[in-house]
Length: 488
Image: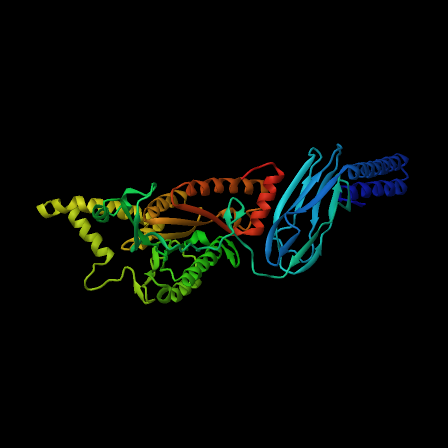
């Protein structure tokens, strides 16, 4: 036990009074010194009694969200203090973080005399592999005159494992998909373009399958069967806008989506499916590789995906990549095309003109202007529209993005499904924010909102929406939901 400033002041007062009483031979002053000293001893006894009673009912818990992590992983650690008896003491409690842990600020709470419970959560990083034991929490009690420090509470142990290939979750509502990304069947007959055979009609065949000439010739209904299209035209649309930079080092939204996109591209190469890529930044399309057999496009697409970095909102459209990998400026000024500023000036002249030519073209310009403005606000929509324009046959469009712009994504998916099947690979923001798990209950509520949005997209015909994120962070959120009785 240590006296605080006021305690030392009172003790000094008692000493001064005693000295004055001796020097000036004043018994009354000596009596005052005795009274001050007795009062101080009484306060000391009361402090020790309150401290003993408080410590017997005080509960201090240090709770890491996980007990096993990989190096450089950030997890929330919560310090909770609860007491059951009334006391005049103020308690300052500090978590006993291991030496190998790293946090911006110490995890500490203050339990005032009128409070029964308090807690605080901070994000802690674990840069060093090994077993790390917490120290018991440090409790400093004070009543203004005296201060005492004790340790108490359980001391959990963390296991920090060396870096390993991270586990990436791709699935629905926490359930991981079992099939490889991009696989598809190759049955021999179906709705392709090469005629396979004619056969007699059987109940269940559709009217558009009937071969009318053969039916007239043989006097009985015949239907056509075609060889199935075994090649699936795969168009990857990868969003790398600034919002996709969210996440820890080497584990951003873009990093995760890139990994899945590379897997899909690899599957297309193995199955010899035509493959294309469109990348989109904050200012619009940043690259495009037209649909072609993977022998032509795979190398360029892989390089593009590996080189992608999140753009800044001020970035202008960069370069586009053609099917053979050559680079060209998207908005390059050339001798036979007008620059955007020149085109805008021409539109402005049309708008001001009052001659017959201007009046004739103005309605067309007005429609173009409305569409141009909408596309400039929805670069992902523009990327899908551009990638699907002039593409032959049905497409399998794979959109890699996050949940930060739900309205834009709904419109984009609605457009893309007109050209065939759509897969939306979504990176939930709550799984990537460095401090996203600090309030685990709020994180679960945010994940539930994301899951509702994902299901909304999957409800579209020909659309499959999957979540993409770190498996350990998702598991922590789902565990928290189960403990509170929630259902995603």
